[in-house]
Structures are given as structure tokens and as C-alpha cells.
Amino acid sequence: MVRKKAKSKRMTCARRYKNQKNINEHKRKERREARKNPKSRKLKKDPGIPNLYPFKDQLLNKIEQQKRKLEDEKQRQKDARNSLFNKNRKLNFASLSEDASKRDAEFDNDHVSEEEGISTAIDAAVVGQKDNSRKAYYKEFRKVLEAADVILEVLDARDPLGCRTKHIEKMILESGSTKRVILVLNKIDLVPRENIMQWLIYLRKELPTIAFKSSTQSQRKNLGHVSASVSTASNKMLQHSNECLGADMLIKLLKNYSRNLNIKTSITVGVIGIPNVGKSSIINSLKRSKVCDIGATPGLTKFAQEIHLDKNIKLLDCPGIVFTRDKNAEILLRNCIKIELLDDLISPVELIVSRCKPEQLMIRYNVPMFRDVNEFLLHLARQRGKLKHGGIPDIDSAAKIVLQDWNSGKIPYYTIPPVIDKNNAILDSTIVSTWSKEFNLNETCNEVEDQNILSGSKSESDFDRVMVDSDESNN
Ligand SMILES: Nc1nc2c(ncn2[C@@H]2O[C@H](COP(=O)(O)OP(=O)(O)OP(=O)(O)O)[C@@H](O)[C@H]2O)c(=O)[nH]1
Image (spheres, rainbow, N blue to C red):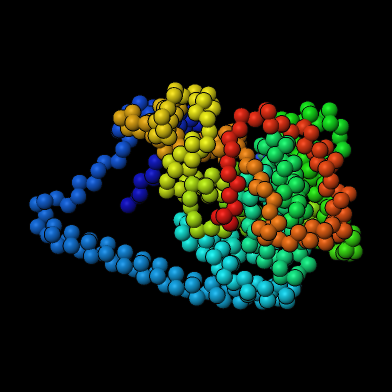
């Protein structure tokens, strides 16, 4: 029997193109229809098991049992993970200390004596947050701490004490190791210059401190530096510039240290601080190119990253860590916890509203007079079109807007340093004088250089300010 030859499906190009065009047109039409009538896009609801099905009860029981079994299994795995982690935590200390002992035996001894303090930190870093990655961040943080010769502790100039981790500083300094700590007061463009000067005086009583503004330029390479030696007049023009300020002074300090200690190889400089203070931005500014990812979301840096600034200086970027279990409104205002992880968005906004003048918020958000935070958020939600089904104002979305503005500096705020109390000082005041020679502090970090850096920044009279109490109790 002769088999009939199958008909070829080949067609002319013209026909194929025409078919494709028709298909595209059809899909476009479907999309348009779906946009016009979103309900039609919804998946059909599962009708469930029909009542007439004779074994409905048995089937439902079986499903229920399976569900319960699955939940039990999940809980069991969770418990096992937790107990394993608790067991490992102590081991981690031992192994980390072992590494440290290779570098510096004394550091290790003190570290063990500080176990209580660090344990609190690790608890804080791991427990009580929905973000479990903090455990990994803490490990990276320890690595940086142990590898660094000089540690740059980055503080947000708007609330330096709120960002400071004094127990870590104390642990490093009292370990008797040769590690040095420099405080970097970043984001000075968000604070009036008089206030920065006050903070520099306050902080320099305990540790070398420099004022810094990271570059916020968007290009990948050739990020600009402004030298402190440029004239005051031209610096004034930099008031709104995106270029970096203070990099020269910082590099000079590090080079002085390397030269004075006659270090032939490179020095390792660890950059630490709570999330979002600008650690990665500082590294990018020093390197003059975008070598680290930066962004307004806290917790962007996830691993320690090594960057070679030049043959003498190696920088280590570090994930930011919050050293407290507490999640009170004060801490939330430091932008160190992701807004998405907050259970209560209203309390921090309430704190902001209580600190701002009502007129300030009314002008900024173009809302009418309000009596309390709820009324303010209702106005704002309506004004910004943040509405839920049925036109109900979405106050959570409105609260997010306010928190984002607070953190990005659109609502300007700053803190005043407390009165210097020698009896209350945690760090020994002799530290600065001892280190002064190593860093040539008197030559590099003096008032004239500071004035040069700050001459372009805004003065107190230009600020419609919000005053915040300087609170370090949570660190
Ligand atoms: N205005 C201003 N903004 C800055 C400055 N430095 C950093 N920022 C901004 O602050 C935000 C956080 O900067 P990052 O460098 O990502 O901060 P980080 O400390 O590395 O953050 P994590 O990776 O979360 O630990 C970014 O939106 C930066 O643009 C500064 O000097 N001035």
C-alpha cells in the first residue's frame, strides 16, 4: 500500500508574517480588554468539594490532617534549627576568638571577658527581627573587626550618638590591641555647620573625628572630590553640590598612620556603622568610583567587601548592624531598620509629628490643619491619592511617605551634643593624645581645615529645623 505523503506545513513568508500580525493584534486586544475590565482577569474561585459528593467529610478530614502534619513538621524543623543555632553560638565565639588570637592574643582575652556585651549584640542581631540575615551580617562584621588595623566608625551627622556603638569601641580599645578607631561624621550636608562644629568638639574629646560628605553623584566613575584647600568663595558654590567633602583629610590621616608606624605593606581599614549611615558611599567617594552598591534601603550591603584604594590602603566594607533588640520609635527614626519590617508605622510618625511644627508639615505636604497624627495621615493619604478599596485613606502608605522623607533628609532634623561630662565619658580622654602623633592629628584635623570643609554648608539660620534629643541609650 502506498502511503500518502504528509502535506507540508511550509508557507510563504508573507503568509507567516500576516498570521503573526493577527496573533499580536489579538493579544493586544485581550490586554486592552483586561485593562478596561480588571475583574475579568481575576482567577475563578475554587468551588470546593461539592456537597453532593458522598465522601466529602472524609476528604475534608484527610486534608485537615495533612495540613496539621505539615505544620507540626515545620515547627519541629524550626525548633531543631533554633537549638542548633543556640549550640553553635557559643562555638562561634570560640572559633572567632581563635582567629582573633592569631592576630592578637590580647584582643581575644578581652573579647571573652566582653562575652556578655557581645552576646547581647548577637541576640539583637539575630532574634526579634523578621530579617534572619542579621546573623550572617554579624559574622561579616566580626571578620572586618578582626582584620582591620584602623576602623572607621561611620556616624550620621544628624544623630551621631544614636549611631555610635560605644560597647564595640570600648571592646576594641580595651583589648590592648594596636587597632585604631576614627569617627567619620557623614552626611554633613544635612546639618548646619555650627552644629557640626559642636559635634566635632564633643567627639574629638574621645576619638579622632572628621567631618565628611559622601559623593551622591550618579555616574559610575570619576566621582568628584572637593579639596579642603579650595577657597571659601568657591566652596560656597558647592552648597548644593553632589561632590565629596572631607576625603582628602581622611586619606591624609590614613597615610600619616601608615607612614608614622613605618608599615611597609598595606594597612587594612574596616568601615563599620549601623545600616544606612553611608559606609559604602564613603568607600565609593574615597575610591572615586562606584565599587560598592549604595541605596536608601538599610541592609543593602550583605557581605564584607575588600577594595584596594592604593598600594598602601585596603578598605573593607561591612554590612550595617543594629545592636539592639529594642524596636522603639526612637530607633526606627534612625533608618536602620527596613520600613517593610516595621509592625507599627504610626508610632515613629507620631514622634516626628510631635517634634515638627505643624506649619512645617502643612507646608511640606500641602495638607490642612490637623489635631493629631491620625488626622495628619488621613489628610496626607487623601492628598497623595493613597486610598484603599472604597476610597478609605490608607494611613500606612501615608506613614511610609513621611518615614522615607525623614530618613532621606527631606524633613531636616539634627541633634545637639550633650554637655561634656568627664566623669561620664566611656572612653579614656588620653586616647586621642596618645594617637595624635601616629595620625598627625594636630596638623591634619584642626579648626582651620574644618572651617574650609564646612564653609560651603548651610548655616543654622537656613534650617527650618526639627530638634531631636540625642539618645545613645539604645546602643
Ligand atoms: N545627603 C547625603 N546622603 C548620603 C551621604 N552619604 C550617603 N548618603 C545616602 O545614604 C544612603 C545610604 O548610603 P549607603 O552608602 O548605602 O549606606 P550603608 O551604610 O552602606 O548602608 P548598608 O549597606 O545598609 O549598611 C544612600 O541613599 C546614600 O545616597 C551624604 O554624605 N549625604
